[in-house]
Image: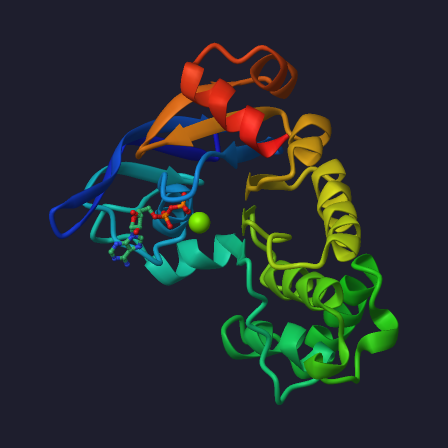
Length: 241
Ligand code: ADP
Ligand code: MG
């Protein structure tokens, strides 16, 4: 198990957003997280990569217990790549610079090595010809693929995706999902919050249905999506299909 989450709770003031999440993710596993808006999916991911501090519970990532005061949070963060709904590329840097910046600054990689790695990653996401252009020349789908390459440049052990295709025009969704699918095939451990039920069905090993801050149901995609046990999941699936 590369990720172990035990009774994770997160409050914002008096609002309890995560009410005790317990789950594990195995190495090379692809887990899709689905659920209505406001159910705590983003908060869950943000706790996993320490963008939010948990209120209670335990998260262990690759052997590092995040609540252990001796743990090097920056080190753990490097192991967990994250891709958001909005791409957040640096507008005044080229595509390649966007991908090489963190490895040079944080990992102290030499510019030459970072450049080689960056070009290889851009090739992997199908954008090697865009290395020297600025983000404003890219489509949303291309920007999101750069964001994926940028996250991969830190050589993470786990990739978290928070609705990576939700802000895209429908015709651009497929190219991003294809990149993610290839990543899954290569054995990357992934947690993907998504509304793309086709992707969940085809690519994931397991689907987690979150509702009101808890995991209401989880299981193999086919069973969970075709034969949901929970009434709230049934209602959710009716709305999304
Ligand atoms: P989801 O991603 O499933 O839509 P979120 O994790 O974004 O859900 O949000 C869960 C709940 O937490 C919502 O009620 C939201 O308003 C609340 N919330 C999220 N972030 C904050 C924050 N920084 N401060 C206060 N409330 C927040
Ligand atoms: Mg969200």
